[in-house]
Length: 134
Image (cartoon, rainbow, N blue to C red):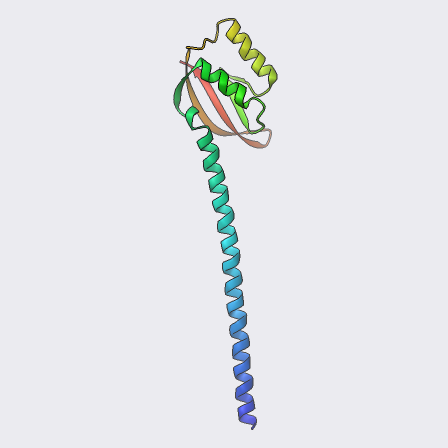
């Protein structure tokens, strides 16, 4: 009877160790799945952010488009619109842009090249849309 008890205990220990190993592997896969899910969400978020500004990336646009872009994003905390080295990211920038329009330094039909890039402003990564008159 001692030998069969010993075998039963060894069998029980074997099952217990197997359960611990399987639980550990399942736990690791579960954590990896969560990490991959977060990476996918981040990638999707970055792609949608860049897609949002695709019409301004390495394109030629008009003065009207510059004004529309500035009006659209001037109060967005994660976007900086730059017109001839002036950041138009608040109401004062919009007023300056309007002044340029009134003085005919900026015309609706003027052509601009535009670039979209990620830059750091005050420790925050922002999307910068830069317009340069052609």
